[in-house]
Length: 140
Image (tube, rainbow, N blue to C red; front, top):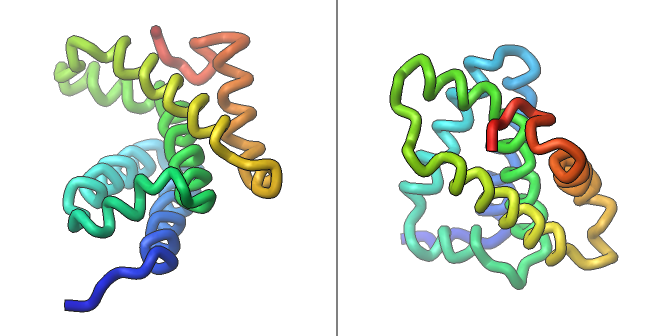
């Protein structure tokens, strides 16, 4: 069995995030489908690859995680409507969203100065939410 390299895992993670962002510009529904597929990818990752994805010692993985959470934050309105339409809104949704925002702040704080330019967008997302928690349509 071939071992996945950190570079190949990071490349796939980046490609999935980029696909989600590009697709979201075309169609909110297709963007939502990409987000669901991303969760599926996480769930199905073999343990050794998941360990690479959550490696806080890797600036690349920290940046990818920050971009993932920032992307998820801007998709809040889409996600909310999907939950409402399907009447499957989780009971603890408010706590989940607050936790995601705390996680994004933490990830942003983990990005070192040498990589800060690559984290401008996730930082901007937090700034908007600090000014107005409903900026992206979330109800917290």
